[in-house]
Image (cartoon, rainbow, N blue to C red; front, side, top):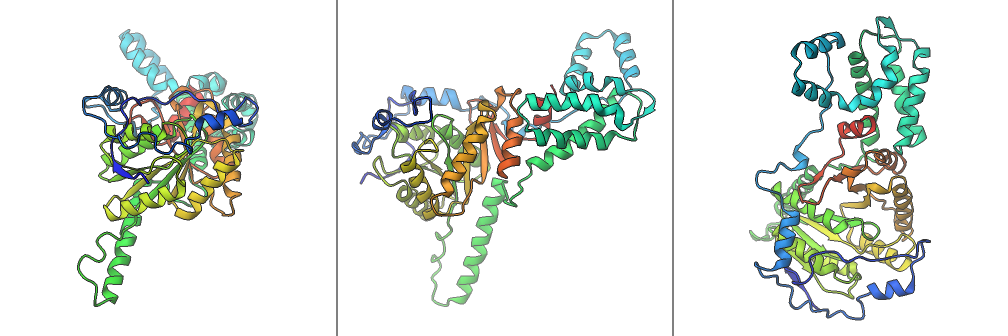
Length: 443
């Protein structure tokens, strides 16, 4: 049995290989499965997992993933919606008098989130009280706009109803005032959709601290009940917070896991990566490159091992070596791949992770909804009631026309979007904010 808890990797592996998992009709072919299966070759040169500091693979990984000097992480940047609260006449006069192109550009950027909204609501501005009949056509057009960006029909209706409630009976003297009222209505309804309905705490940093404090209190209480405990009896008994990353092949699970590890490390946590994809060729080596680039340890046992056993071993190692978080990488699998789904179900049942995150490309739009629903159903079919806890959307920076799918996925499944990936670097990770959703919907 090959076992290592290091942050090293094979020299020639720096990029994920291109792979085909199905024949275009959601059928996993035997030829593809055989090509990917490493179970018949468990001794795949994993004895040499060290990557020299001057290796090309490591240099390329560091250049691709590590942030530039003084770069601000995306999770520290707020998506703030800026409304122009001044009267339109005042703004127009101001720009006319100054003739300052830069000032005009700045004003345009501040108001750009409502560019499509202006054409919908322009006819309502004026010194009058807005009636429900005034909103029929604008809200119909808003509904069409929302559904065109993959917002589910019932969610689009809820959003329009919220805007109607906010505006009816109000006197709006300018578009800027209408825009402010609409923004407030949008923020309220979208925040409600994005909030975790299952009552789980999806603030990972807060959840890790809470688990640590709870175990510390329990350990202290146990020590008080026992007179024979020595001083070090409870030192290494605190179990880590365990996050399992799941999803279909090729959506960026390993990179997303590495981003979360970097996020946790910058917040003074000590993550351990667990290589539980014992199926895909090169998976362990790929994760090892991330571990070396991050400067965090990797727990691996090679290929042809039971993923659940590897995860259990990693959790024990983390407990003994004071790692407060274990990030578990799993094999990408189609939701109709029965053997791999059973293996994943076993991993979840045996190890009771604190968080199961489904990784999905934001680019797929509503197809991601189908993936998540079928994956969740397949996972629960293993004989347990555990559902997907949260969602990680990758390539979110390229999906302004499909952003509504994120709302739909949360609304239908009850699993909130925990993180979105906005680029390749480890710092290109952030929470799905209300502001970013509104900007994408109405820009």
